[in-house]
Length: 382
Ligand SMILES: Nc1nc2c(ncn2[C@@H]2O[C@H](COP(=O)(O)OP(=O)(O)O)[C@@H](O)[C@H]2O)c(=O)[nH]1
Ligand SMILES: [Mg+2]
Ligand SMILES: [Zn+2]
Image (tube, rainbow, N blue to C red; front, side, top):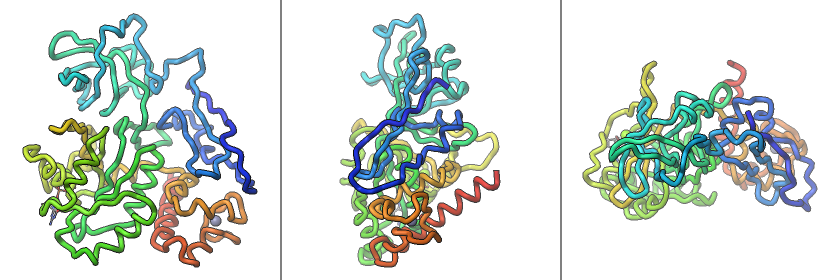
């Protein structure tokens, strides 16, 4: 691994705060884990409280890490087209060039040997430079640096689900299957960790009256998250949804049955995604390939009808990073008596006091402790 982690001062902090403990500690001694770092820079998301950041630098001697975009030695990039990977299927990758043409491309061997996961050096969403062979086929010559990455697994080997996702729609459905805040919170932590902006979509609004929906909309809106009430059936919220996904790549995520495919079909009639089907992503079959596909909508948006719960369950999160996804804890964390407080049973825990005072909702606090337990169990069962 050619990357080096360097601790640099980020911002002087006037508050008295002893906690310079490194939340990325888990990564430092695990070379496989550093491969998962989702961008070349991780800033500890604590706003004013951040004192240090861990940046990942490629050592000059070896720029050949795939995060930094390896390039074949004899490639003339001027002859290449820039494009986005829409689909990965075995060795064949479908690439949409920026001028709107589709090519079936293979990855040049040199890139494979340079990459971390040799079988899957690229993922949907990757920006690549291709050298066309003819109107239909070409070679992937270079992988551009990734802005973000949705990964699963971090201890053994990271598997990249999708790259360069700009936002993730966390879709829930009223009544069927019902709103599950603990699950939403898990996605939120995952999004935070992947460097992807989350938006909360509450679908099937036709099945409840607004008053009954308000508690959950209010809960997340108050935390500062963008929330949308939608119905694939009545069309409520679809205009806003359309606007929202116009830019960049949007992942539709959420439990099976919440209406992801229905929403996409409603946004774009003619898309004809199968409704009421468990996608191949979630099937448990041993040999099921987990391929995702970027769908290009008429308006030019790129969307991905993505993984459900299981993928996120597999996506292990180091316990110290869970707190990072609970934004409303952040003002209180530095006031905890112990710098490594996990906000459960410790004395002088300011987060727990905030719960008692009603400054942090019990619902969110419960999600936090639940997640912490789950991740701990996983670590112990390894
Ligand atoms: N009442 C109602 N049902 C919906 C809505 N959206 C989806 N459904 C239904 O929910 C089920 C699952 O939808 P689907 O789009 O396959 O969910 P996915 O698994 O998240 O892709 C189907 O029976 C849909 O008809 C909605 O807004 N209102
Ligand atoms: Mg679906
Ligand atoms: Zn605490």
